[in-house]
Image (cartoon, rainbow, N blue to C red; front, top):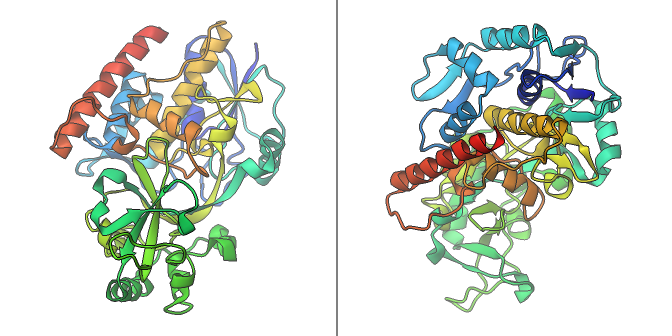
Length: 433
């Protein structure tokens, strides 16, 4: 059977290597360097375009746990990366050029990998295809993905509001309710007094922003304005927009609040809550500082911060099985950031899972889903079951299932979850072998 992997980024590299190492031939397509994206500068595989850090190595961080799971599953990228580490405190950082160059060398010289340096504009003639074209998928191939998925499920711009760990919200500073009592009380309304709103507003309009890249400028349209841009149109603009208190009554006072910030459940379990309408271009430290001026969020832990940028991704909860197979065509799998995961390692991890499942399909076996208790499994569970529109997500402990026992200390609780995750991944590895 013929296998094609489209895109030699982090996910595509992991997928192709996994398939080839299992003894199967694979065509690996990469358009660079013939055609570069607005962010890439070389033709190397697994090129790192932003930070050279793969995140924390601590087992009590989402990124650290994910890397340990990936090592257990035989990650190519982490095996290469350890030879090119650079000092970065508790973070795992690499010499990006040497790292990508070595990954390219390994894949180009693999006897089972046929590298094809050209832009893919249509699905190749292959029995199984892995699409791992990333957040800057070419315009022509994006049109092909639209045919596969329906245009309403393919997004070209992220307008992301911050997401908080629900367990860190102060629920005494607001109330659960839908506007006009319509619905089932799915929104938590963080209440602000006039004085609290004034302080928040002044800091918001003064907040330091991330400068836009040229290819991101088209994102400024009315339906996707950053919250700080709305605020600059006048002090009361937010009170008629994302912070409007209309249709709400505070049960403590029996009156309408001066202003509210609504939090909405981002996953079925309700462990993640997003700030509705709070997409922003504020720098990350500024977001934490300013949004913690909202009384209910004073001690909030932000598992994801807001942004607005160019990013092609699919609504995986509508389109993919947890095996990463396309529901309408199981012989096509998606991997990487195009699925809605975020970050280098999350992208690579989905490539490993796609590779595992392609091998199983070639062997005539049923595809598998990583255990829900693992970080890899929880990420895939999130993107394939997201409650609302999918907001891209990186690894964090709020994605993992709650423990059966109560552990008060936060670090101890994370460590226990991490231990369970690694035990489950080891059992998963044994089962698929």
